[in-house]
Amino acid sequence: ETGVTQTPRHLVMGMTNKKSLKCEQHLGHNAMYWYKQSAKKPLELMFVYSLEERVENNSVPSRFSPECPNSSHLFLHLHTLQPEDSALYLCASSQDRQGLHTQYFGPGTRLTVL
Amino acid sequence: GEDVEQSLFLSVREGDSSVINCTYTDSSSTYLYWYKQEPGAGLQLLTYIFSNMDMKQDQRLTVLLNKKDKHLSLRIADTQTGDSAIYFCAESLWIKETSYDKVIFGPGTSLSVIP
View: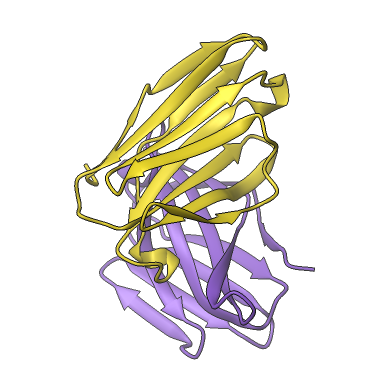
């Protein structure tokens, strides 16, 4: 238990659906991250929020829309996804944007797009 | 370009030592990391090494860094069945323009421990 929770743990959705992934951290951190782990590519950083402001967007398609309403919660809104978006989506948090070793990872949401 | 490579599979007998290897291309890395991922779980940081170090030991884990060859290894002594997992190597690169680290992960090595 790292103090970072993600829901749902598994999600199956059609290409026309709209769904959201949720991440919550109970560590008092002020930076949160979304990563994508797919079968065919190494782990990739998608978005970074620091003090509830998006500070990094790594060329992620607009069908992924993050939201950070407060420092404890991070969402990833999904719409009109493609089958190649099927992956494990990992959330992480850290206190300030220090090195990777300061990030605590959640267990991930396994997303399948049909 | 920036790339981190690992062999995809490793199988060892319980009680033996495991050595997981990683190579990277960018010599300007600041830190190098090893993560463990068990089935259905997120990433667990095992250990990390600053790029000016050659070796780091932490209980059963030994990390060796050869900067000249851009080679990182993780040795697990007395490997147990609970060590079966995917092990990811990662490097962080300091990006002066953004004042932040850029992290590049390897594809992961699946370690199977045979009882």
